[in-house]
Structures are given as structure tokens and as C-alpha cells.
Length: 253
Image (tube, rainbow, N blue to C red; front, side):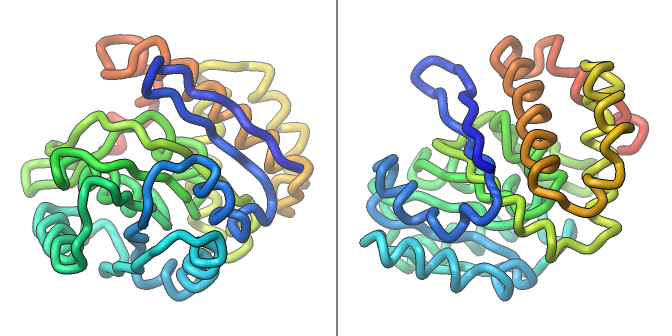
């Protein structure tokens, strides 16, 4: 089961590819895209231990240079000091405008990597490879990047679209169950806020979803990405409609 959808933003358009086990093919996919000659793979220590080697192997097999750069896991890393440390690491390794970044991880990793890509050398390409359900259905799509400061969440950031999003549903098998359920809250949000038929479909397919059945998980994530893409296409910079995606978030923050 593999599906691809487009986010239509003119010359900043990109594809989202969703499937079970597609991470092992990420090298050929990025080679075909031709976005960068080398990638800095940005990942937290937990995800890097699980998937860092696999992604590096796939890129190198496809003839793409890569370097794995790791930061401490968790929301506590989502601040400007981490950005500075990672930027210094890229500079020390000689990264330039012909290179790119690959965000391998959940929402924190995606937000940090996207922000770093938007400001390093005044902007280099980046690719999202989200490994949590929450990141797969929400934060990896739409180009919102940012970090926290003591005064609040995500108060420093940019709108900067990825060149591609690659979603491997098989990684959900290593996601803690509580984090999977947290992501499901976001999935249910799409049904509650945008698509009542999808809400009903989720109710009817609860058992298969909780069993991580790819035949159900892939179309579920695809539908969420379609809704997110549709909203972003109409209101990329959150001037009005895009605020519907914050349903439940505002009070949570």
C-alpha cells in the first residue's frame, strides 16, 4: 500500500509519499528528486538509535553523501541554543547551499530542522521523514517551523516548506502506545473540525487502527494529509482559514 498526494503551492509545491516500509527506499527517492548533493540527517538520540543507520545506508547506496547529527530527545531541546549548536555543526562539516537537511523524527525534530534549514546559508532545502503519528498527520506538512522561548511555544519561527515528505507507517510499530494515542487525537480533530464522514470512518475502523493495520493506517494518514494540504493551499501563512487546524490546540497550549 503506497499513496502519493501533492501540496499545491506553485513553485514551492511538493509531494507527500505514504507507505509501509518505504524508508528503506528513501535514497533512490531523494536521488530522483535531486534536491541536494548531501544531507545532514537531523535526529534526536532515541530515533537516531532506531533508524539512523537505515537512512544513512539507503542514502549512501543511492550515491548521496550524508552526516547524522544528533540532539537530545524531547521538547526541552526545542530552543534557540539547539539551533545554534546544530548550525555550528553544519558549518564545521562544510555544509553549503548545495546541501540539504533531512528531519528524521517527530514534531520537535521537524520544527527544529525546518527552522534551521530556513536560516542556514539564508535557506537550504530540507525533507521531512516524520516518525510519530502526530508529525505524520500534522506538523510535517505545511511548512510551519519554530522553537520555544520562555515566554511561550513556537514564538520564534518561519514559514518554510519542505521539498518532500516521506511517511513510513511501519515506524509506528516502535512508537510508544501513549504517543500513538496522542497522534490519534490529532487525527480525530480533522474529523471533528473538517470531515464528518471521516469521523464516522474512524469510529468504524477503531480495531484495525489500533492494530496498526497498514490497509487502514495508510489511507487514514493520506486523508489527514489531504485535509491539511487543502487548508495550507488556501491559507499558507495562517491569515484566517488555517486557524481551523488549531482546533483544540489553543486551550492545550
